[in-house]
Length: 177
Image (spheres, rainbow, N blue to C red):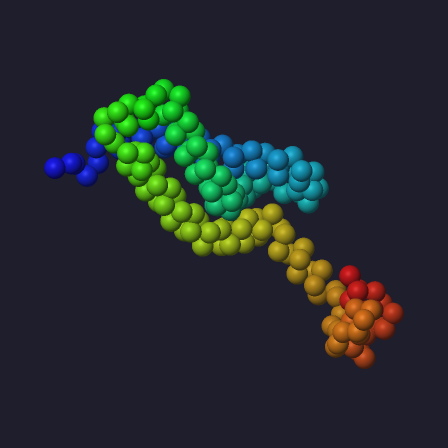
């Protein structure tokens, strides 16, 4: 009788996990560095303290990890199978009577576990993104801008028609944007 998790399965999962963790944690780091370099002057111009800015990037992690997790899974599977082929481990497995499908079964199971993790992070991301927006003051900026836009009663070919209570010319310009 074959054990539920063989030595080959543990080896494959260990190799897959190395590449997966490197990609799943490395790519979000790159995304955050790019985001920080793009928006640092804006954040500092608002007077946001550096510690608060760094803390806000903790709340940015679930969203970025959720975005790069499919790529991390792809990289992990491709590099793991590529390493097996390069070291002739696939040939050795075939010679000992183990099919390719049996060899990649643990990789499939690990990839499905990553999908479940991604679904969980996708559910968590809106909550953490809202918290990050509060820390960076993005929500207050959006609310104050909405308050200054007059209400529109209907739409025409040109955009929208301002309500009778507002200045027509000014409201038409704002509604068109």
